[in-house]
Image 1: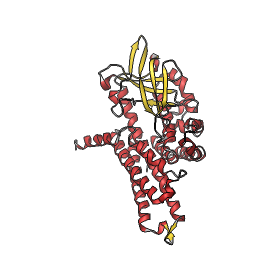
Image 2 (image 1 turned 90 degrees about the horizontal axis):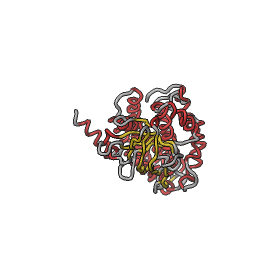
Image 3 (image 1 turned 180 degrees about the vertical axis):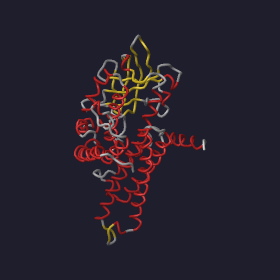
Image 4 (image 1 turned 30 degrees about the vertical axis):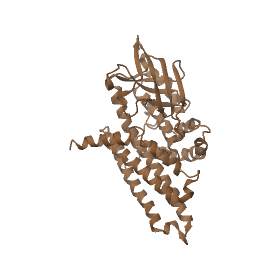
Amino acid sequence: MSALTTDEQRAIDAARGFAATHVRPNVQAWEHGHGDSRSVLPEAARAGMLGLEVPVEHGGQGLSFGCKWRVAEILAAADFGVAMSVINTHNVANHLARKAAPEVVRQYLPALLSGRRTGCTALTEPGAGSDFSAIATQARKVGDAWLIDGQKAWIVNATHADVMVVYAQTEPGAGARGIAAFVVDGTRDGFVRDPRSDSGAARAADAGGFQLRAYRAQAHELLHAPGQAFKAALTSINGARIYVAAMCCGMVAECLRVAREYGATRHTFGKSLHEHQGWRWSLADAAIDLEAARLLLDAAAARIDSGSDAQTAAAQAKVFATRMAGRHIAALLHAMGAQGLREHHPFLRHLAAAQVATLVDGSTEMLLERIAKDLRKL
């Protein structure tokens, strides 16, 4: 594994404290629809989670992507939805700090870093998921401003986010070449929030949608011009695939921990579960794949930090980690017997989240095509 600096280790320790104090005690309430992850984002800010990669000169910590994936793993061990919520607000803050006009940075960044405002990145639409170039939201130039019309769906944090990075088509029929990105303020006219996405999986991700109806974005709120946004989005998605892989590792690690502890106290046929060879092999099998997944994502994260092409490495890490999570969370639940079905255990919650992970930021099938494309070059 790549080495960590003292500041990065401090951030990881802070993530553990935040998860233990503010996430784990609230998970069951969130799952039953009582409250949402926004309530703990100010605490995430105080723990430094919202400024991990944000440059120091903008009020962040300026830490590596290698540190970020480790934080994502820790948060997802407690709850995948909260991990997605925290990381997505962080991503918007980091994106604005590095790419937005100075007046946009002044207006939004302090509030995002403090958790007073929350962020989301909006690519997915009712008719466009992994096929990013097919988005139908349109932005039309009117003088120095842009009028944006369209609908976004299945967006993390969309039930409460009010600072959005929105991708829109500026030239219908142009595909990727016409896509631009804008900073959208959810408190302005022309923004209409849709209901929460109709799913009980990863509820704390607060996924939902919104509509833009003749929403006016000023010239300085153009984040990426047409022809640049598509490439910027793909770069961000490579990073997302890696931290989603890390979240899968966190969920498997947590299920493995619970099963291991249970196996020491539960006795069948006169001996502990750990003394049954077949039972302990299922745990050993999970531990092997967990370590392999971490090595894959650590290698992919190193490419992000070095500025190298991470497309294939990110795809490999996500495919392996999501498959690993789906297989081993189910197996570890089975190893627990009926006890694993209890609400206070993470198995059912993490198993549903593992399925979500196979779909976000590129489906497994899409990533297999990415990997196969590289194989043809060999």
